[in-house]
Image (cartoon, rainbow, N blue to C red; front, side):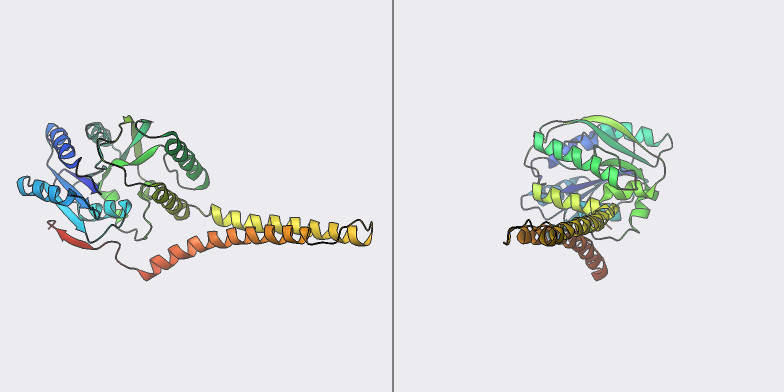
Length: 308
C-alpha cells in the first residue's frame, strides 16, 4: 500500500495536467514516500482524459477513473476516495490554485498526531470581488447556523488519515458536501495557512449557478435553520395578519374610517402568499434531497479505469 494517495478531480483541465503532474511528482519524491495519483475525469469535454491516460502509460503511479458523464466535483472527489489505497490521502484540485508544495507541510503536521490537516486561505488571487465576498459571507453564515464546526476560508485541499476515508465511505448521501462531512466525523483536526494562487490556465468550471447549488447542498446537509426560519415566518405572518384583522374590524365598525376597495386585501393576500411560497420552497428542497437518497441510485458511473 502506498504511503500517500493524491486524489485529483479533473474537469476540462488539459492546460494544467502536465504541470500539475510535474509539481506533484517533484514534491512527493522529495518527501521520499511511496505514492499514487488518482485522477478522476468528471466528464471533461476537452483532451484531459487522453493526457491523463498518456501519463498513466509512462508513470506506474498514476490511476485514472473516467466517468460516463459529468457528475460534479464533490462526486468526483468521492470516487477518488472510494478507490485510493494510501495510508494518508490528499485532495487537491487540478487548476494549480492550491500549491502542491504545501503537501509536505501538511503531511508533517499530520505526523504530529492529527487525523485531518486542511489548508486555510489567507488570500485568494485572481478572483473578483463578488466571488470573494459571497464566499466569505456563505462560510460565515454556514458556521453560524450549523452545529458542526465547519472551518471558514477553506476548500477541499487537505490531507487526512485513512480512517477518515473509511468513515466517509459509510456516508451515502447523494448531495455530497465533504467540507462539512469531514469536520462532522471529528477526530483531531488542524490547519496550515497559505496564499491561494490564481488559476494557472483555463477557465473555472464553478459557475455562479453551480456555486449556489453547492451552497444549498451545504446548508441543507448540515443545518435545519431554513426549516426553523419557515416555521418562524409562519408564526410572524399569522401574528401580523391577526393584528391586521383586529384593526380592520375596529376601523369598520367602531371609528368607521375606511375606504372601500381592494388595495388592503391585495396587499394581505400577496404578503401571506409570498411567505407561504418561500416556506413551501424551503421544505421542498429538503424533500427533494430525501427523495434522491431514497431512490438510492449509484453516486457515479465509471466508463473506464485502470484502478485494480
